[in-house]
Image (tube, rainbow, N blue to C red; front, side, top):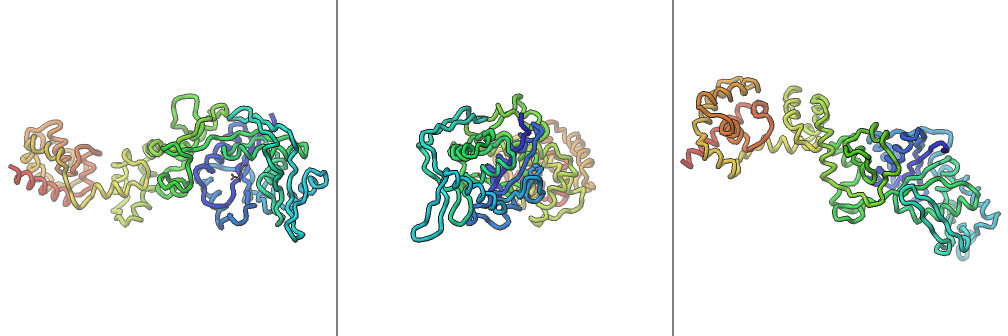
Length: 447
Ligand code: GLU
């Protein structure tokens, strides 16, 4: 097999979108699996659509995702330059060669010397290629009109420039989105015209939303830019894992795979033909699995900026670690710590009907009263609270659910939740006593 060289070729027209990120990721994984090179090339010939900072943002979020590349505009390499606008001479030279060979012609604008160059599409040729994903695809040249390869401003069109670049950059495989299938015959015409060998193409399936409609950048129900996930506190390793499952599946059932495992297990034969569904719940689930794997120190440092931004006072490092430790199992992304904190420390403490009924049925008043008395003189660290829970159980002859769930409901309003002693220590004495009093008053009123 020829040396594997693949590329990701974004147009710097905006932020890194989930669909582009997927193309980049699969090319990267492909290169690393086969020990090849991964190249980033900037396709900036659509001058009016280029946005300032577009290229930097693309590269920035690719490396956030954990991708690295061997050649690019910022890194250089032996096949540069890596921005199409810096390669205009090359396109001009080859367009002129096609003119000389009679395979292209000048198309003059009315009343002007300015001309575009059109490729003369041969009649009655069948273009066919073996797509890595879809098998053999065939196109008839008679369905394609003569098309512009160079615009009258001297800038090449995508279908022409991409061939010149892929050829001279010695690209061996092209993995890209399905929307490029119909471009491929035009590209094959150019390879044929120069007598060059075309790379092997693979067109990855579209990504659809939960209504099975093609994901569109305007779809407001799905967050689609990698920067947005980064800002919410999704973990790059989890995003990498999730994106790798959009149109590919590992042969084993286990879907939680780190980059190394994905690269090892990657097999182009397992790229899927069926549309890949962007499943938000799956993303949240995968991310929560990665959050759970973090050690508490790392999680605390990742959560800190989110709490600070929400003006939540971080008492000290130990407090912060207790807080994140308490919620680690419930967080699907790190920014959620703010909501969880707010729900936990809510000012308006409320117990819903089902939970309150539990207190009524178990006649919890004496238990709560005794617990309050013990807490009042306690130093309120989690260990001591743990001991006091035991003691109040003995003192009031209460055990099991009536004890543990009773105290939990009366102090947190919830029937289930994280470790109660830790939670109470975090809430602090003042809030816990106030809540106990509030709950007891309600129970007394209902007697
Ligand atoms: N610039 C093209 C795009 O962003 C690249 C397509 C290709 O990989 O050939 O869709």
